Amino acid sequence: MNGELKSVSYGKRVIDYNLFYVDRKTLEIAVHPDGEIIIKAPVGSTLEAIERKVLKRSRWIIRQLNYFNQFNPRTPERLYIGGETHLYLGRQYRLKINNDIPKCVKLSRGLFQVSSGNNNDPMVVKKLLESWYVERAFFQFNDSIDRCWPAFAALGLTRPRLRIKRMKKRWGSLSKNGIITLNTELVKAPKECIDYVVTHELCHLNHHDHSPEFYNLLERVLPNWEKIKHKLELTLV
Image (tube, rainbow, N blue to C red):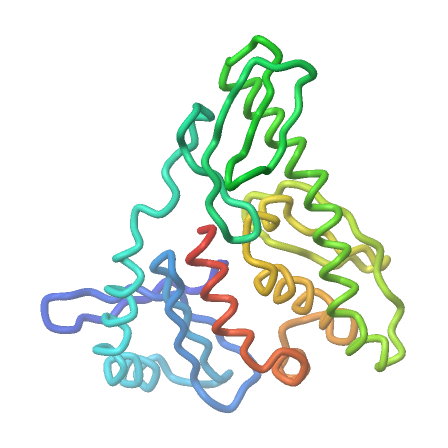
C-alpha cells in the first residue's frame, strides 16, 4: 500500500507514516501489525493540520506499535522437518514424518502426519503439505462463501465463482467478471478471519472501491470486522 511517505518527530522518536488524501470528512489513523502507519485525510487538508493531529495521537500510536512488536518475530521460516508446527484454521499442529507409502498428508490427533514414501527430503514434505493445503482451501473457502452469501443474496447480487492461488501481498480480490480469488495461505487462519476476507471481497460486488459506502456496507454486514482483521494480521503476517 503506497501513499506519500511523511514523518513527524515526537520527543526522540520519529513516526513515519503513509499519507492518503481521500473523500472523507474526518482524519483516520491506523497502525497495522507490521508496523505500517496509514493516515487517511480528507481531500484539501493541509499538512500542518495533519501533523498536529498525528502528534496529538502520538502516544496512542506508539502504544500500538509496542503492542504489535511483542509478537515479533512471528512465524519462523519453515524447514519442513519433524517436530516443527504448521497452522491450519488458526491452530498449530506438530509435523510428524514417516516413510509410509503412498505419499499423503493426514491431520490426526493434533498432528500433521506426512507419509513421504521413503523420502524425507524437506522439499518433498513441503510439496505434499502445499498440495494438502490447496485441497483443504477449496473446501473451506466454499464453505465460507456459503456462510457469508445470504446477506449479499438479499441485495440481488450474483454469486461469484471461486478461484484460489498463492499471492504475496493480498488475501483476496474480486475481478470485474465475477471471480473471487482467495490466497491459499488464508486456510491457515481461523474461520472467522476467512469469513472476514470473503465478506470484504463480496462487498466489492456492490462497491468496487474503498469508498465510505463500501465501509458502511462492510460495517453493516460484519460490525466487528476491524477486530477480526487485526486477528488475521497477527496470525499470519
